[in-house]
Each structure stands twice: as structure tokens, then as C-alpha cells.
Image 1 (cartoon, rainbow, N blue to C red):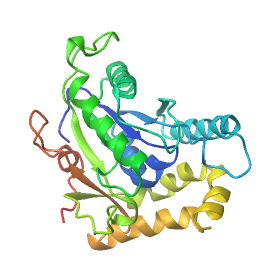
Image 2 (image 1 turned 60 degrees about the horizontal axis):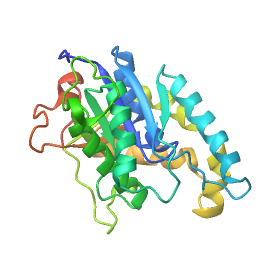
Image 3 (image 1 turned 120 degrees about the horizontal axis):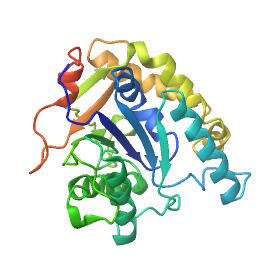
Image 4 (image 1 turned 180 degrees about the vertical axis):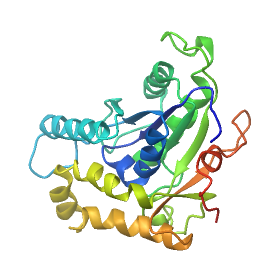
Length: 254
């Protein structure tokens, strides 16, 4: 296993339960390897209900997210933006930079840049912007943590493995989460409020099964029982070595 200067990972996602669907298996592997894990969402999921007020469902979903994170010793954070209205603007980017500044992650996960909904794509931009900026001394008034630097950045799989135009997403790598699938399922099950919401609005009553199918799809493509897929951001100033492959030698490239 390759040592990292700071073994701190952050998943910045749009809503509670996004990380559980898209990267929780990898977060579990990192936690098992001694990494400090943070899970953050832009919004508290205040529109994810047919029964509650925005404030009631927000309190429920934030508690569910914290319980899920607690299963792997992770810390949950929320930027408290509004569900379905997340935007890449100065105030929201400021919140993201301040979050990154306090955590100082060396490894970041976020949404695919062309995922199916704008909350996801806007959070992808926020994570990209904050990951690049947070280490600059004048970027935030939050004290700079020693060792802060541009982190490894990975985009998670698009939902249903297709972009917003329905085109298949080609990952750069998939990570074997076969041994972590049971705990990943327990993390997702913490988000009990979402079963009724997804059945009412999305027409699905397969909350856990949908996650299992996605993990099995990516696993089958790589000859594994279950897997999570990622695309590494390789733009200027970002690390070029594939940290996931170095940490998890069984990672299968596709």
C-alpha cells in the first residue's frame, strides 16, 4: 500500500444517500485501511418527501446520513443548500472551500460531471473548484492545515452508468467491493425515509436492490461480485498517479 502524506478522504455529494449508492464500498475499504473519512452533502434532502415539511425531512435525513457515516467511523457534514436548487456560485463555492479547508483531504470523491440531474453536476463543479483552491493561503479564513495540497480527485459513476444523454459511461477503473457490500447495504438502509419517496416519485420500490444491481453490473464487467466505478480527474496541477490502484492492487481496470 502506498503511503499518502495525509490519509484523509472526503466524498462531497449532492444529497444524503448519494455516497452510499456510489462510493460507500470504497470509503469502507479506505476506513479499513486506516483513513479518516468524511461524507458531505450540499443539501439536506429537503425535497425528498411527500409527507413532511422541508424542515422535518431535513432533520430526518441529516440524522440518517450521520447514522450511516457512523457505521464506518466517518464524519458527516452538510453545506445546507436547497435540494434541487444547488448551484455553482460564489457563496456556495465559499462554503465548499471552507469545508475543504477544515478537512484538508488528500483524496476526494464527487459526482460524475455529466450525471442525470443538475444538483449532481453542480456539486461536481463545486468539488472540483474547492479541491483546486482550498490549499491557497488566501482562499479562506479557516486556518490552513499543514500538508494541504491539491488532492487526488475521482468522479463516481453516473447513476445507472449513463450520462444525462443516456450514453454509457466508461470508467477508468473499478474497485472491488465484494467484501464490503454487506456493510454498504447497511449504510444505505440507514436512509429509511427515502424508500417511500422513491416509490412515490421515481416509481421504484427497490431502493436497496437498485444499488445491488449497479454494483453487480460494474462487478460483472470486471469479473467481480460487486464493484464501484470511477474516473480520475487528471487536469493540470492534480496528481497523475492512480492512488486507488496503488492502494487496492486488486482494482481491475476496464
